[in-house]
Length: 347
Image (cartoon, rainbow, N blue to C red; front, side, top):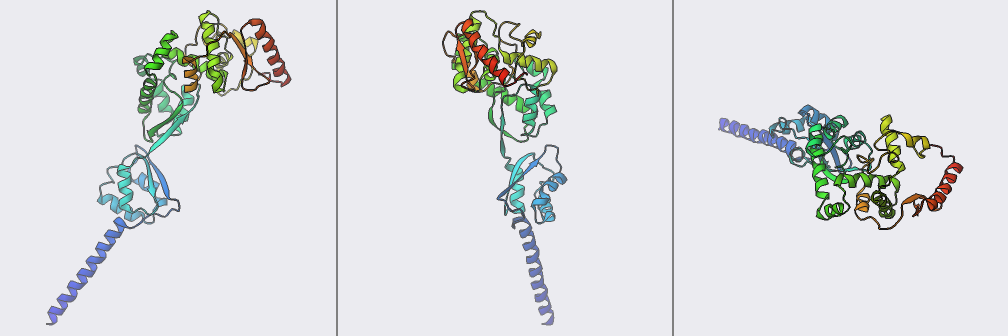
């Protein structure tokens, strides 16, 4: 009888101990294990991360790091790290966190505007995805990529149309480049291609001319009229004589795209560069910036008129005065020059 009581007690103790162990295991797996106040915290897992790096990222967010490590080991996550951006929600358990890190890589919106060089674009993109600026510059300038897509050093910026695009944060430089080329080819639908052909311009020439339009006016509603001026000049075999191309030529010559130049001087017009449209006829060999879609479509849908000249309108800032004759243009130009001198804008 005594032995039976002992066995019952031992059995009860076993059940209790087992229950405690099961409870601890259950708690470690399924109980909330976060300690931040926001609804969600984001972690960025790099492609070369090992588990210790992941744990370091998560440590400030967890109540109990050891329990997380135990569950991660049990679920096989320790040796199966996946790069990306992940959202850890307030109140998540270790099980929820690990499942999220395994399968819920969140996309990011990658946005870029009118960059003037591959290096500038790379720097902008590197702020938004894992790839660094060096790897991006190398990918965007890759000779094999350029030649296989009928691009060159001058037209390397052509496929990148400013907009907002959805990427995974851990996108590589090469995958970013290849995806943007697909977006560029998708942009050139049958309608746009037909309009370019009607203008007797290639896609690359449209982009390069649109870049000039982009730099000439920030007013979207004026861009078709400005584009019309340049198309009229091309038809008459006139020089484009676009000041923004001279400014770009100066920057490219100096390899300094951070310089701000507000006024083109007569001496600047002598710079020997294929981008200097005061010296060289036709469209520049490549884009002087990355034009917006509005500028590209402004070229493809240019306003039909007889204007051949334009200059900034000092009475309606942001817009321009247009002229059909050189004599009228010179009158408008003198007004603008007087305004520049009055504002003491010398460069």
